[in-house]
Image (cartoon, rainbow, N blue to C red; front, side):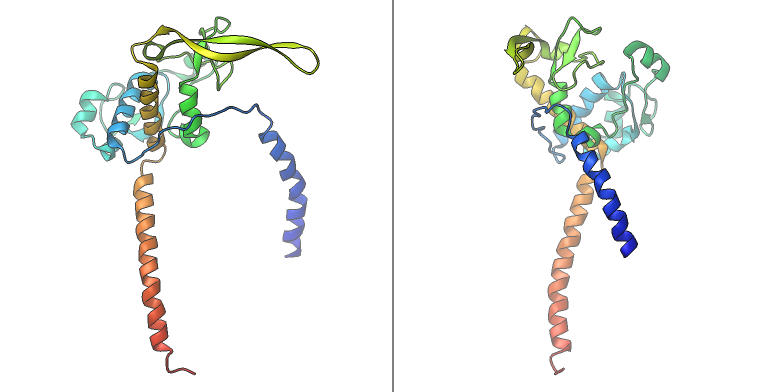
Length: 249
């Protein structure tokens, strides 16, 4: 016990040093993602967006196409509408682009998206996908309010349209002037309204969240059933205990 307490005391300074480091980045205001893992229609729409817009560059190597039967799709529907990068529904969502080529084209290989919402959080991904704006200083012509100097182009700009920032000049305490973004404005409409685009991104993030743990709803339902059983069993066990011990003084 003494050795354990000593190790904990020695570890406290290291833990204290890691806390400021994790909170040192600039704060980003995130919008709440509309997550509902029981909405099969939303998950199906999100799967369609993912396959058409994300799966060209980003893989999902820990997800199999046929797992989407859990969101109400049949294997025939998967084959006819979603199976563009594979031959069989039992295959994983891999891509043909090689890592070396991706680094050459984008500067870094696009990450696998199997657990992206578990890593970044649904709110971060939802805000990120709606935060692209035109930036001529970037090689792709795009930047992002959540991920500054992002290397990814805005692959859904035909849907959202072109967003440009409106800048203002601020003066800090030292008297130095800085240009900051005041607001965003739509300069070229896309095929969707901004509200429709937000709904589409919401469906996509909903699907990405489900894909990160397809068994989550089932796991939670089983957990609730177990807790209910334990609650009922506790009442039965309590009265059995009273019955068995009623004559013991």
